[in-house]
Length: 318
Image (tube, rainbow, N blue to C red; front, side, top):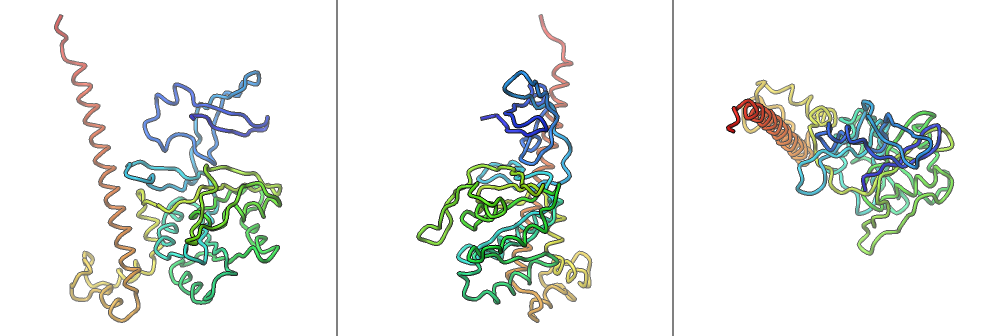
């Protein structure tokens, strides 16, 4: 409803953005997001504060907003570690995990894969092997609520002054893990539906301060993770493919039949899985589309400003 809950040394307050801030802001992503540091007019006598400025973000987990809208959405800001949560049931999806890892690397934070509900997985070793094959250079944790202190392994990433964000689909156990970290039933949790898919329990993003001094950000379940200007993240996620591409005979190799193509050789010899190569191409094409669209919109905005200036200079007939 246009209000933000902020916390400062003086306590908590509801806040709204100033008129000047709103007038100068042109992008949705420039508005305050969960995890942001802001400069405010606190007004100790009033019930609400006024947000005047958002401080530069050291990191931000960004995705294309869900649906047909072409807008950037800041899921969480100023995070040190992104816990990408995926349950070892019907939620298990390697292609979606690749997408999440790519967005996490691009955010400036460090991704950690958290595989939940390991107690109901019949082929844990095989699934772990599959995750290790795509989560290159990333810590991978398995958790189960059947073991009382299994969540304690997460605390190594949530030290004093550090902020972590929990990302994943509905029902994977994000809120349950946070409740364990807090030592109580702080967040509402739900079970699975009859089709083994999660119910939406968390309906908004929220930053929670832990007694240990760290901070966690809980997010609603997300099944759509649209790419938004994410070339560096893709290259880091698919570093194995990038290394193979460097072995191609020609720098401008399109990997579609040229002689000396290392990608085709890797596919033929089983060094590279077809599904992973297709996933790489899909994300690269998606990112190229978003980059071209951004350039088009920027050029369009520039032209509109120039036309507006020209119109203002025209003589006015009286």
